[in-house]
Image (tube, rainbow, N blue to C red; front, side, top):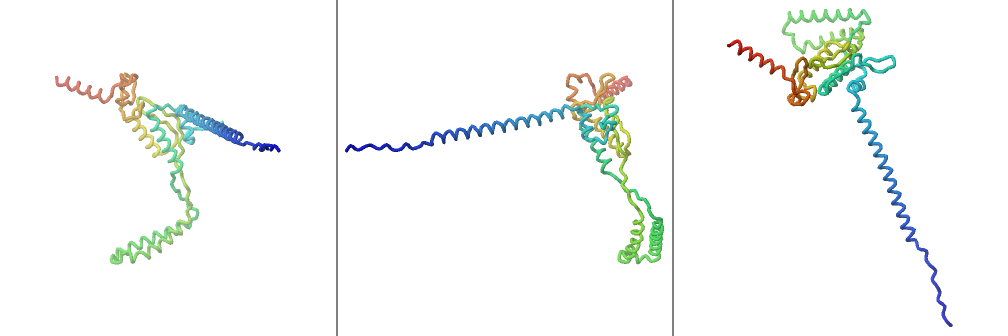
Length: 269
């Protein structure tokens, strides 16, 4: 008999399908990563746009957004500065710090104002003063008893009357008067800060800021001095005076010294 050759059943090959699944999985990862990268790029662009918009806002709007309590409010609720804010770039930091100091002072600083709620306060207070006066007279007659060991019980006794008098007082927090900015500008090379309200402390802050501006270049923020070009005055540093728009400005100190020297030389002649 002729033996018949039996064919082996063909085994199903999965290698091609496995490679196809790997390729599909890799493409899927690439798409996911590209989408995530697009989302990140869009968010970064939005943030950069917001930063650019904030930088483009003028100094007046930035002050209003940062210190809204220092500006007037219109009927519609928007903030307003009656005469506007115009500050050179070199003085913006000084004005910003001044507004921050005024805002913190008016909001966080207060003193206690006592209001007497019961007339018995005068009775307890009078007894305390009478005991103090009698104790001082007693120590003058007997100076050897003027020691802390002997006086401590008496002081604790008088303190009880004082505590009773304090219970008849109601303490209220009194804050400084509110401050509203009318105008901030540069005039004759100096800072001008016009406002309404405040007290002596606020006036001192404003004077100190104006003094700092007199010593600071209004262009670069470096140390500077008052300079003049005809009837125009500006506070400039040496580096700023070397630039094109400010080359003709001369220091007033130097000009005054030169005038004194020339007048002194003429007197000698």
